[in-house]
Image (cartoon, rainbow, N blue to C red; front, side, top):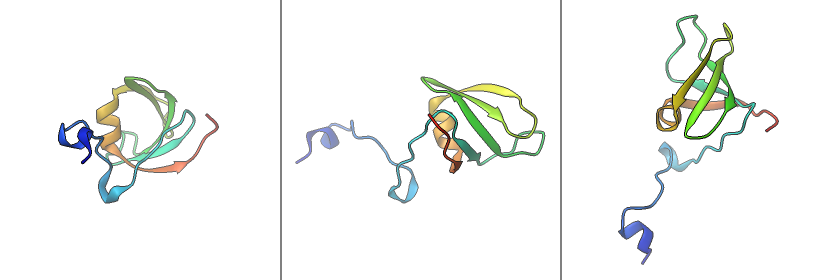
Length: 81
């Protein structure tokens, strides 16, 4: 029996059992669109917060990791990280 699972410390995976791994420079598609109309963002900082840049207007924002991971639809382009 897996003790981590029984204690509730296991890591939840994205829907469909897929696990997404992010790198700096990746372009991701988010579920919600930015007010400029673009839904693609480039990752420029990772940590407890994610720094992302809108590919439409160039606006940079910081969002918490859990909110970022929940809002990502897919990785569009894998950057050099």
